[in-house]
Amino acid sequence: MNILVCISNVPDTTTKVTFNANNTQFNTAGVQFIINPYDEIALARAIELTDGGKGAVTVIHVGEAANEPTIRKALAIGATDAVRVNAPAHDAYFVAVQIAEYVKQHPFDLILTGRESIDYNGSKVAAMLGELLDIPSVSIIKKLDVDGANGTVEREIEGGKEVLTIPLPFVAGTAEGVAEPKIPNMRGIMSARTKPLTVVEPVEVKASSEIISYETPAPRGQVKLIPADDVAKLVDLLHNEAKVI
Amino acid sequence: MSVLVYAENADGKFKKSVFEAVSYARAIADQNNTTLTAISIGNVAADELSALGQYGAHKILNVSTDKLKNFINQAYASVIAKASEAEQADVVVISNTFSGRGLAPRVAVKLGAGIADGAVSLPDTGNGKFLIKKTAFSGKAFATVELTSANKVIALIPNSYKVIENATGAKPEDFTVETNESDFKALLKEIVKSTDKVSLPDAEIVVSAGRGLKGPENWGMIEELADLLGAATACSKPVSDAGWRPHSEHVGQTGIAVSPNLYIAIGISGAIQHLAGISSSKVIVVINKDPEAPFYKVADYGIVGDAFEIVPKLIEAVKTYKASA
Ligand SMILES: Cc1cc2nc3c(=O)[nH]c(=O)nc-3n(C[C@H](O)[C@H](O)[C@H](O)COP(=O)(O)OP(=O)(O)OC[C@H]3O[C@@H](n4cnc5c(N)ncnc54)[C@H](O)[C@@H]3O)c2cc1C
Ligand SMILES: Cc1cc2nc3c(=O)[nH]c(=O)nc-3n(C[C@H](O)[C@H](O)[C@H](O)COP(=O)(O)OP(=O)(O)OC[C@H]3O[C@@H](n4cnc5c(N)ncnc54)[C@H](O)[C@@H]3O)c2cc1C
Image (cartoon, rainbow over all chains, first blue to last red; front, side, top):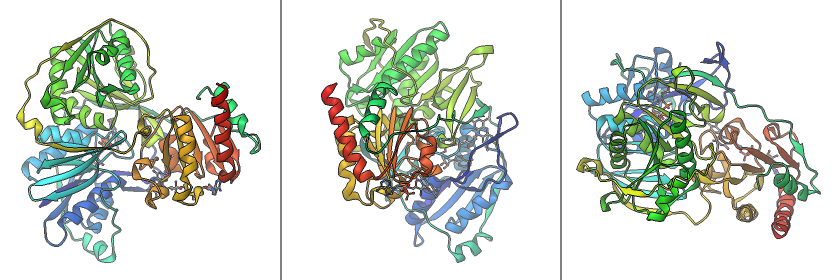
């Protein structure tokens, strides 16, 4: 079984988010970039599913050469090889089209993404890929098994879950529960340097969305502290002042 | 031109997030001097369908066939795209729910539409542009996105737009579409409802607790407080990692992002990754024994003290309030 794992390069979760150039650019100064945490889950599950010679795991990233350390990290964790589409990720549709083009030429049995990137939070790439390839997609799953020609997934729904069986190939966006992220070991790190990383050029895509500007949430006022021996006061404030109960 | 809104049902009923989406879509229709069509797919009774007209839908399309009884994103996307073409809709609004996320991007690709996911505001259509504010960096920021395509899809975050009564008297009409066999490859085996508790993404009030609670055996008071307030329960990441609570309760940058009216954080320090997921809550209450806990910096109300003393008192105070209300 050959699995493709899509990986996004995102700011470390401790990043304090600020913007440049009149709030039109994310300020990357001093920011550490990592594999999107949900993509690490996808990668870990792909490695588990192909363990012991049962297949190969290719990772694909759409982005510039500066993001290669993130791709190497995926190789160190255990991916077999990697592909980088040499273009900045303009938007989710651009990313999905690039990946779909690659898949049309190099078919895979299963395509995994994260449930969403932690920077742009689109939750779009998985479903877009499904549509572009005309195959099923499930956007947020918490369990994934493959048995022969079929996969079984648990999909999150409000207040519960759904269990689906889907014939391969399909696209799935992984969330917590699917696998525990793997930490690269020394052998992985050493071998990552020599594993193949193919660079392919992008196909042209007409853009349909553009980020114009950014803002950070309005700061909240000073916290109102209520003495621990007057808890009823809190209930009163929530009812009469904040009007939320 | 017109606006189309997809009304997602849960067991044949519409949740508040649907009426928010209908109200929102109606406001967009008004901005553009056009009409709003709502579409429901699945088994929803006529009187429930008519409720869509209460919030401004001029036309209500009902697709109710056995084949489309259960949500399959691929098939539902085809139906919505066909309805959009039939209605000559140039804007399609879908709630940004778990199912909506699997649906909206597929609809967008079918329609060649730009998509604004995670929308939190009405489009700004000044100067002939179409600008929408959306969440970004997992709650740490917002981005304003311009959609430049003729067709547009908007995925609206629940609890970010108010429900507006605006009765049109519209009655449901059946909408028939041809389905493609290839859209039904995914087979639904089973639906498992966790409980009859309030689900976290829909909740208007969330009672959340962290490592300060010491162990899973102490969640009784958290659940009791939540029940009294009609709230959902949530937790910090280490709590779900340790198996004290299910993953589906984990909020934050790598968990669920919530935007309730009231978020009560008990024994949670307020790490940046946790705050990311809850920063768009309207009112935040913090209960923590450490006055220096970072959570107080983003809180509206706080009580400094031991959760094991304060939460039982809070439960009593809420009971007293409810008895008098
Ligand atoms: C400098 C810069 C400018 C940008 N400007 C815009 C803009 O103008 N408009 C706009 O809409 N977006 C913009 N983006 C956002 C960027 O294009 C997003 O990362 C991309 O659109 C993916 O969308 P998402 O984050 O919503 O993905 P999601 O759908 O949330 O991601 C889900 C999954 O898709 C996969 N995935 C996501 N991105 C990639 C990738 N690059 N390569 C491989 N797999 C991936 C991962 O598995 C991820 O877990 C910009 C980004 C950068 C760095
Ligand atoms: C990649 C990554 C992603 C992450 N994503 C998330 C995420 O999405 N969500 C998330 O929550 N975390 C996330 N984290 C973890 C985050 O950094 C913090 O470690 C976590 O939020 C802390 O959880 P906590 O507040 O429950 O525990 P602690 O930080 O241990 O805080 C416990 C708090 O309880 C208080 N306390 C103790 N006893 C009592 C008492 N008797 N009464 C009242 N208060 C008491 C203490 O003063 C303290 O403030 C992530 C971390 C990483 C590295």
